[in-house]
Image (cartoon, rainbow, N blue to C red; front, side):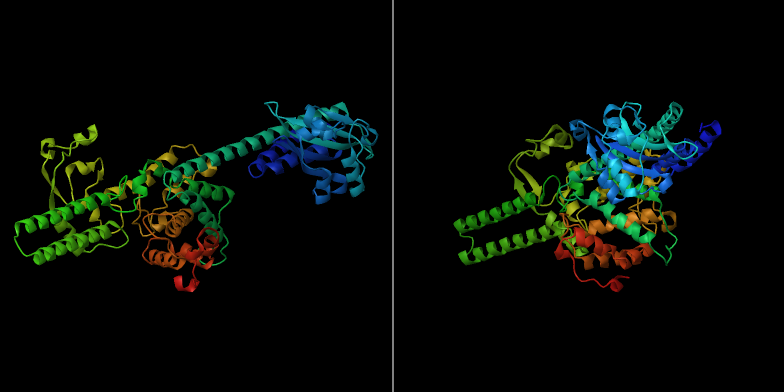
Amino acid sequence: MVINQNNYKDLLSVIENLMTEEYTDAIFAVINFALTTTDTDGCFYFTCSDNFLNLEGLTIRSLDKTTITPEISALFPSRSINEIRARKIRTPEEICFLNKDLVKTANLYIEKDLNSSAYLSFDELSSYATVSMLGIPLIGHKDNILGVICFVNNQNTSGRSISFSTEVQNELTTLCRLITLILENKKSNEDYSRLLESFIEVLARAIDAKSPYTGAHCQRVPIITRMLATAAIEQNSGKLKDFNMNEDDLYALHIASWLHDCGKITTPEYVVDKASKLEGIFNRIHEIRDRFEILRRDAHIRYLQKRLQNTDSQENLQTEFIETVKKLEDDFAFIARCNIGDNRLTDEDVERLQKLSKITYTRYFNRMLGLSWSERERIDNPDEQSAPGTEYLLQNRPDQHVGIYNYGELYNLSTLKGTINKEEREKINEHIVVTINMLKALPFPKELRNVVEYAGAHHERVDGKGYPNGLKGSQMSVPAKIMAIADIFEALTASDRPYKEPKKLSEVLTIMQDMKNNGHIDPDLYEIFINSKVYMEYALQYLKSSQIDEIKPEDYL
């Protein structure tokens, strides 16, 4: 049968529709079209990947067979190009694969130069007779072989197998070029997807690698996100019973969850990892401890001087010295406790810090020595830094303001809760804006158009008090709310953060329950999170056994 122009138009319409959904369906649409219009009974379709030849599909019209069974797979195992080259007699598809050329025979049974054992075994297994064959290599525009199609049993009007004519051969070769184009498009998209995902993973791992303490965050948030999204999709009742996501939506959410913190690449490590209030490049509590050491030594010197001068009895002087040392030890212990961010400071604590900050000692070395030029530039009155000079126990010096940051010791110690001061919190929050701007600059394809929205909203709150845009729940998509919960849960359960001890699962769920009640996270998704036991599915795989305690879901709803 000759394929006319109308036949082609119908075929191209079918392919255009199929390729928007599934490449394999489009390929087999062409194959079935080719078999029907050329009166060919069937074919064996092989793909070539990484120099391996694999049976991908088959169609035998007279048997109504389109399924590759385990028995058939065993007849046509995956073969490498090195295996094929080592053989003296090769199968038709192997010759096509190796030589990138047509293979044609009128009767496979009597062909001595071809290894037809697999086809003969297939015939015996299926009560069939593979007689005539035309093998056509699928060669891409860069001369790379993408696959092989072995057409079998071209038929005459009476249904008898005949040799493939030149006309039929030309028609099938033309249609195979169309299949090659589909395969190239498929491979190009797969390569693009692999490249995109690899780039995203590399970027996420680079962000994690900046900090030894958050090294798994960008890798684990996608896991929790996927678990909760799957649970939400499976709901048959409740407010989210109609919620659904197609493959493109799920892929966009997957990409967004990997990229949600890409803006942290601009956040200084010491801010992300800040385990204590005085931590910068190192924990500056040691500087303050040294000052207490000086004060203690000064007290000891005064004691010895008074002894030498006999200003009072030895007993009274010792008592005075011991009380002074005890007070210094108590004051330093208090400051050291304030340096840790676990407990919220009271007004009395802040007032005590301010009183302690006014204690002075004498400096005997010039503060200007050993400073970099940029440090010297920040000091307005360098002459005042010469020795000797008076130093405060806790300092808030002008030169401790560097850019947006305030490194003042009293200022940082007075942080009421946690270890991050106001400026550092703003810098951390800024990573969301950086994330959004970075993602907006990327030319995402249509199916990934929601990545920016999903990734950029994971610090928003349903009550509108989140950042960066103060979105309310009604303004956020369900996937964005899913990511917010995933990000919080991973952060709370993480056991690698220097500023907090690992929390037990019950502690984490209690905090999340409060966040739900206070308008932080979406209550409907939280309910799914608890009822579907997403928390336990994740915990069993990724949390330490010491963190997993007994949970009654109803206690956290």
